[in-house]
Image (cartoon, rainbow, N blue to C red; front, side, top):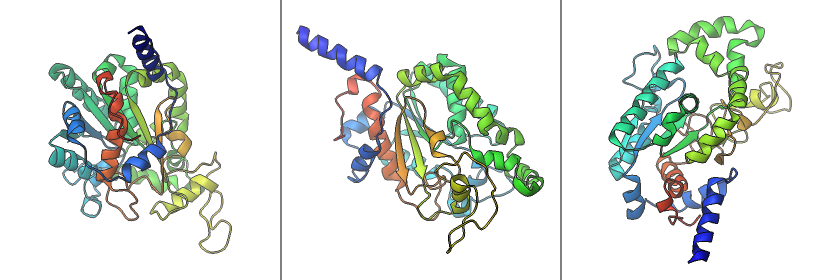
Length: 335
């Protein structure tokens, strides 16, 4: 009996103070099974509410959202719509997409706050699945108001630029004075210069450095998985942006070398076309890094999709499920 108790304490200590784990191989192993959630898994997950938090440009990719003058949803379908409907229709889970703002991050934070307040009242914890800028808003809300952390069951961050995106720098200080033409276009997409500045490394890095301890405490308290994309060596509509982030210029199609001059002075990194790879990792949080995945295909229906949104969602839920509660620690799912 004493031995069992000691082993339980050791297991608890290791799980509570574990370092970041690379779950990429586990992701592929589970994904390739293409299996539906089991009855046991479904019974556990139905006790939580699922909230999807879109990122920047969401207004342009959601048909019902008229804040953007440009509507691309007829081509790409609604942002996160596949995942929301999948969990709702297939498993009868409570699954919703939050309204977010590309103009004011505080508005997104307020909507997240409303969900957290409601979860406290109903005693039903949410599982957040956030993308890009939506993940930054969620992280900041939970760090600045850590009283809400105990109300969260788990978080899956999809391609969030925790340390900023170099493309935000290019938008605000583009070469050849191109910012004179780029900045006037932002309001038509319901994007503010304030949001673009918020996304710059000079804004995000100080926040991350200042809150290192608080972020670690959050990851220790709440199950977190980050998902990164690397699309540099694959077909992608983000190809020019990928080349700029990796080499500072747009490459020639056939012969080696740059087609343009140096557009971006670095630091250079691989990424998904919007988020540098190193910027998408969150301290001690477990991570998944997916090759051939650009910034749009996980949330929209665009060309060159590598992973099914339905199977990806199921796989990510299986990765985080054993961490949701100590009583679920025996749910291992062939990891």
